[in-house]
Image (tube, rainbow, N blue to C red; front, side, top):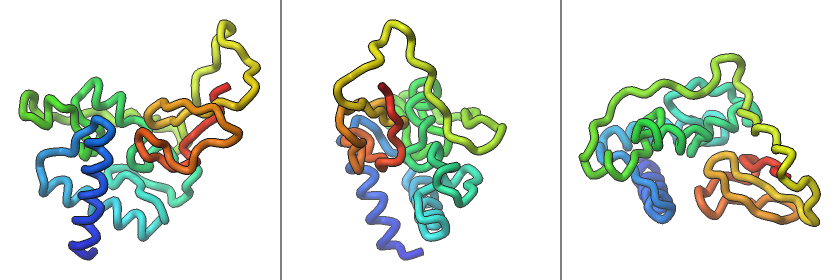
Length: 164
């Protein structure tokens, strides 16, 4: 893997993270290794599957573990880091809390994407325009189809699900 490609992706991820209120791990060696794994998986599968999880090579089955994964925000909130430790909380980035191991939130049964909880009866079911939700960050948009990229977390179009 070329060092230039690794540095370029690190720069892009860092820029996107900071613009969205996220932080990359301050351990530059760890970030380098994780980004190298993301690029390896991109070459192997055609998408940036988390290098710390087993990908199937079937994008539809791996949607939940494409970086940034569906579990990132919950992990950051509870543990200060995502499962692979590429993204960290502000407190961890500033050295105000230690980095520790975290459990994998991904369900062990199969490799299917997590499903949304059913809408409650109090939520209106009929909108004049479909509402789409980004499974990564929760961004909502009302359009005929989801955006090509989430404007918040930069997840691809296939990471959206119909919300209402």
